[in-house]
Amino acid sequence: MKIYFLLPSILVAGALMTGFARAVNEHNHPRCECGYTINATSSSSPFALFTDLLETDFLHLYNLPDSIDVPASEAVGWAVQAYNISPLVARGPFGKAAEIDNVVLNPLSRRKDWTGNGTLGGAPGLQVWVRNQQDLLGPVGDQMVRTGEINSLRRDMRYGSFRVAMKMSDVPGTCAAFFWYRNDSQEIDMEYLSRQANYESANGLSPINLVIQSPASASANYNAINTSTYRLETLPFQPSEGYHEYRFDWTPERIVFFADGKPLSEFENAFDGDAPDAPGTMMLNHWSTGNTGWSGGPPAQDAVLTVSYVKAYFNSSNATRESQWNAACGGEVWRNRTCQIPDYPTQGIDPQRMGMKDPGKSYFFMYDEYCTVNQTLYPAATGGPSKSSGASPLPSTPETWTILGWMAIFGLFLLAS
Image 1 (cartoon, rainbow, N blue to C red):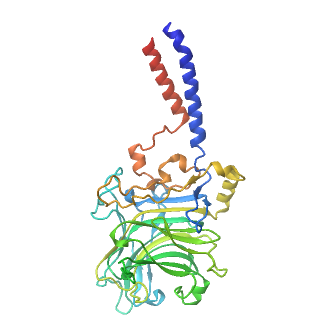
Image 2: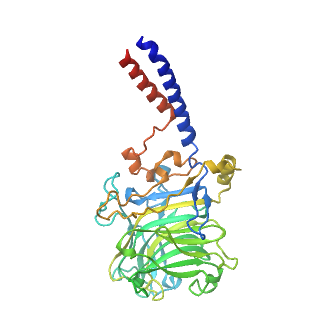
């Protein structure tokens, strides 16, 4: 009798479990398939959809190739740069020598951690160094400051929302720059000059330089200061005292700059027809040329810029990629297959902040396989905390749900009989 009365319940439960598995699949498979969106944060930052992503969690990155000529399994989406620029070309008393040894990984020791010091001690993340004025490279009269730089492997970025979390140096005489770059007349740049700490600020805060290089700035010897696409904006925090997010959203209509998720400045009608509109790459560098009108320096001691993450959500200029997106997401299909990019967290993103759980934690789509359908990922850069801590609560396939469900039901059957 127990079996007779239990069978209908088993069949109903099994059907529900199979249906739930299908629902999970229907919900998860297309999630983010058509891209990532930003909703209006103000009148100056409207809704936008971007099809591609490049996310890098430097708190949990344990290998950084020093060349682009590595197997695909070892690529992390970035290439460390090595080059020399003479003082004449660098437009300063000193040139720049970008060196591989000046880009150093200092991750947290355990993948599951979001707080603490790096494996080398001190602030965790990617370290980008400028070496001191006693450690110059080259002969007197043609000396170069030793600096660091990384560039993204993706060079097809055309419009997007670009974000970096950094802790700036407190040593005067360097420039920390996060920027999109096509050429010297098409560039979108956020630059922090450490010599400007507390500069022209009654409340002891520091400014950041917002620079859009254009044909107008190129004709002015690549100096945008006297053009309509340069602004100096005061930050609502001291950049060297902790990690903060710097961001710019670039669409055909405008470029909006942010700090910790709050709009700083908007460029809309300042381009005179010269707005950037070509594909390019992301760059991050830390440098000095001794130019008293810009970087100052060289620094009296080694200076470090520490990077927690870079997140880029963008449209690809690649024709094949565009064709694939149109086939899968054209018409109105995309509306139910996109994900909103999370807002900057109210608690901040500083892994050295005391008194709270996981203070450096930030959301990454790349740690959820359902959120990166059809994306170009770099396996060596996606083995972060979510992969090792089992953070995803759902089984990865509907078949797994079905098997688990029927196993549970069979267990109930045995107990009932």
